[in-house]
Every structure is written in C-alpha cells, then in structure tokens.
Image (cartoon, rainbow, N blue to C red):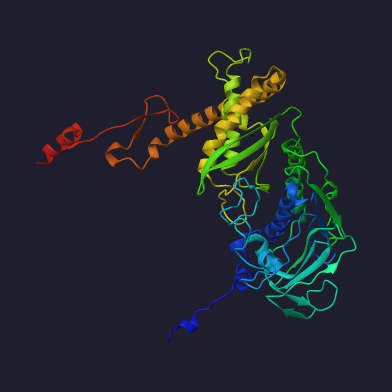
Length: 485
C-alpha cells in the first residue's frame, strides 16, 4: 500500500477548530466560547478612553446569544496587506489580535492574550452576525460556519443561502443616532460541532456579573427573551450598576455557593513586580476575606474566574493565613490549655471566605480554557505583599473584633483537626501492632511467632520475635539424632 503526500490531510483554522474544538476552547467548549465574547466586551468598556461603560447580554428564544458593548467599535476598514476588513481580522482569524505587538502596554490586564478564543467561538458557530457602530454609521459582517460572507435576507437565519467572501469590503449605513458606537456579536453555536455540550447559562451570567464587579465603571444589563424555556436565577437577570470591587464580589460568590457571607471582613490591596518573558512586569491585586464556615474561595485573574485556582490564589491564601496566624500568636487571652499551641495558617485557611482579583499581564494559563494560573514568580512576589497588607490591617485596633472572631474559629478548627490527627495516629499504631503476625514483608527468620501463655486461656497471647540458627537448635532435636545413630 502506497503512502504519499496526497494521503496527508491539511486543515485550515476553521476546519481544525470545528473538528477538534476542545484544543482551543477546553472541555467546557460552549461556556468557554461564550465567555470569550463577554470578556472582550467587558474589557473594551473597562478602559475609560474607549468611551463606553455598558455591556448588554441578550438571551434569544432561538438559543442564540447577543453580547453588545458601547465601546469604540471594531475596526471596519480594509487591511491593504491581507485584503481583510477589521472585523474579519479580529473575529475571523486565529492568532490575530492587538496584544502581540511589542508596543502593547505592559500594564494591560485584559483576559485575552492569545488571539484565539473569540475567533474559535465564531469558528464553531452555525451563524454569527457582528454589528459595528462607529463614526455615525452601522456596519454588518456575517460568518457562516466560521467563514466570512453574506447571508440572504434580513432575519437571523443560519439556514439562509450564504455566499463566502474572505475579502469583503464593508459599506456602512447612516445611524439614526449619530453618536451611537460599539460592537454587538450575535452567535448561534452549531450543534453538529459539539452535539454533547450545552451552555450553562447560569454559570455564564455569574461570570459576567463577576467580571463587571471587578471592572470599575462597567454596567451590566441582561435581557431574557425566553431562553429555551430554561429557568434562570432572578438575581442573575438583574442589572448591575455598582458598587465595584472584591467586597461586592465576595457577596456574589457566597450567594452563588449557597453559603453565608462573612459579616466582618478584611479588604486589602497591593501591587508589585514579577518576572515574565518581558522581564520585570507590574501586577496588582485586591482581596476581601472574612471568617466563615464553610470556607468559600473565589479566585479571578484578569477578570477570568479560575476554578482551578493557581499561583494567585495560593499566594493570596498563604499571605493571608500566615499573617493572621502570626497575629494570633501575639494574643495573650486565647484560652489555651497548658502546652496547647495556637491555630496555624492551615487552620485560618479552613475558616475563610475569600475573593481575590489579580491583574497580571502576560500571565501563564493552564490552557485556553483558563481554569488556573501557572506562574511561580507571581506566587513568590505576591504572597509576601499580601502578608504585609494583612498584617497592617490586623494590627489596626478598629479591626480587633474581626481578628478575635477569626482566631476563635481557627482555634476551634485547630482543636478538631489535632484531635482527628491524634485519633488517626492511634488507629494507625493499633493496626500496625495487630498486623505484626501477618507482615509478609519481613524475612522468614524475623517473622513473629505467637505463643499462648500458661493459664491465660486462648484469648491471651503474647508476641515474641525469635531468631533460629544452625547453632541454636532445640535440645530435643539433637538427642533424637544421637539415638538414631
């Protein structure tokens, strides 16, 4: 059987993404794809110079979703080098974006750095319509099954006749509102690409609310036009107009987790530098934490929720718990028994509700799904900075009651933990003692023998390890050999 170059299948970016969507979007394909579009919209209006402040998410009855912002609007002119217009270059081309250039601001803290996510979302759609308003005109660019072109008719119908055009020149029509600006993306994912996946709209809206809370000045509006008859928590449909920050973020995440939010809390922030491929790179962080049972943790990096945690969460919890444990060691009236130790950092971590938001440009993610942050240098730089800020907060007499309550909960957990550890150690020792007679890992000559003591009955036994050698054979054996001679 011949094997030639003709037997090698070559796919373009759209074909490859539709065939292997998880490569660029992770296992949670549809949620990640929709999140990419929302993150782009939030990032666009989070920058004051872009002129916008509002993100609107519309859930349509046909299962499509629209994400609109009132920012600058995507570029609509044509690139002389490629012949592509700005919308096609941005949302219809893999590995294209505005953050690869060397002149990009190192302090940029947007979620997208790879130029893949939003384009991959378009690639796996049945139809995507992008509407841009800028300079007094409205422009429309459509995509059919990932490719740019034009659908016939005015309705949003993915089955309408479609003509592909990679180098379409956009012609705008005058806006009724000349000052209107921004970008709107309406997308309907292709069920043939991911037949076993569905959008968890509750998780998507929770992420959108969290991103808005971490972006000062951003307002969020959610419109439900009958999203496939699915019930949505009323709180997720409410508009968000502030306040912003990790304080309100912690309340949101505790509500979502069904756990009580702490009534007393520490709100601290800081900044520093860590090492990336660019060299020393600035980062900043903010967190809100308080004593709570059970513990609830919500970690975000560049407005992206990271359920897998990672370097930023490890640093935040390490700095916080170590600072609180150090402060607890200075409290005289903890009510400790003689010889008893106070709570350790791990005990504070176990009774803490925490929301942390880290802005770290050029951060390393675990994958395109961005479920965790992987950066040892960020961890090393951030943990001591968090510890310093929490130490200052804890030393403030106005926060004495909060520290006392936190320490009390940590001490209760420490006592329960140590008691459980002691019981486990005793159980392990008992199991080891019982297993001496059946420990087959010992050499045969060191295996223990069991003897029943005289008068003690069968229930009483002692364990004696005996060693046998050729020189110390029992006397009865030597006498019987003499008789046999």
